[in-house]
Picture 1 (cartoon, helix red, strand yellow):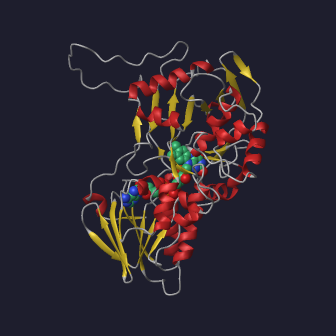
Picture 2: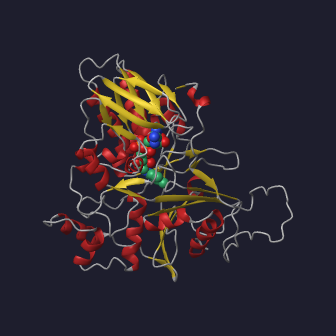
Picture 3: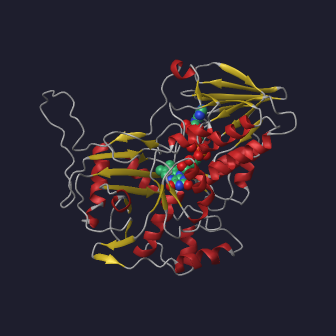
Length: 450
Ligand SMILES: Cc1cc2nc3c(=O)[nH]c(=O)nc-3n(C[C@H](O)[C@H](O)[C@H](O)COP(=O)(O)OP(=O)(O)OC[C@H]3O[C@@H](n4cnc5c(N)ncnc54)[C@H](O)[C@@H]3O)c2cc1C
């Protein structure tokens, strides 16, 4: 990957991570003040962590949400419409354009490959192509185009590549902190092969624990949920996941069902009352696999030999029969033959990039129709564990906690690290908290596991 001088000339992109207040956080130089801010009080039984980091994708200006989801009533094919090339000049990729696996690494990579394929029309070898966004979709498209002799320039708004794949490597953490994608399921074998051949270590997260405020409980049986979705998917009209459950006699507010919906929300970023039952992804099955290494070199490797401008937000894309003009936030405009736009759906919805002429109805309709969901994660570490179980995945059932799902990295890494996952409205609520309140909410969610 070649980083251009633009990296130095333009302002730094916004980082996504913010460090929570923690016992190890160095205090600023003491300034006497009449009232002192109270440190978060750890709830009984949960000691103050030695370190904590959380994601803030909901407010991140270059994501504006976590992943795309399909709201109730949105027709199949909407994502294909979003990804349709315009006049063979403007091409679209990104997880939101993938019909099979939206909101995933798999979908992002597949979309980048699809866009590169569409762009490689006869005569396009040797052309100048801009790729907007250096996430997995952009990196995949750029790599495939460069391989075929296209002169590719990638413009990335942040000061790093990877987008919603963000490993934070820091000496104070014994493992890379994964603020974006790092978990993979049964359908991800191809992605896992790519990761392992790129020297990324993969661990299977084994063992689940389901706990109510009264103690451990049996794993929630997904069968009634799955049956309700199967029935809803055969119905003549779409309904929300919540309505589909109710119609099948399953109460979405029942603690066991709510626990399954919380898992679905960490995958889609959406609540059950907004999610299409026709197009909702299935509940995850099997033991998830987790990347244990820094994922940045994997993305950088794809961009080897490609010109990448970091801290280069694109503000405007103008296109006509003769080519494409890409204007950066600085006002600088550059000419290309074609452009591949891979920015997240949230960025398109907020119209952070102006298109001239305006995008066709099919694209604008798809952008307006699809939903952007919220998923946030919080990483906490302790010098000593306060929990006494060796299961990797913990689910809260019927407990009034903001963060219902936790991943225990102790069994796989030997490190006392817990990772909280939250999706939907709860994630947006978590993202809206200030640092102190966010840590308090995270620790309060852990009292169940003492
Ligand atoms: C918290 C969280 C956890 C997740 N966990 C998983 C998981 O475990 N497994 C899984 O498969 N998937 C997971 N995902 C989803 C996965 O991360 C995404 O589907 C995937 O990374 C999206 O890749 P992309 O290339 O489509 O978009 P992005 O990675 O977002 O890339 C788009 C790029 O465009 C850039 N950009 C934005 N605006 C501009 C602009 N104006 N100019 C230039 N550049 C711009 C962005 O900075 C970004 O780098 C998770 C997502 C989140 C948020």
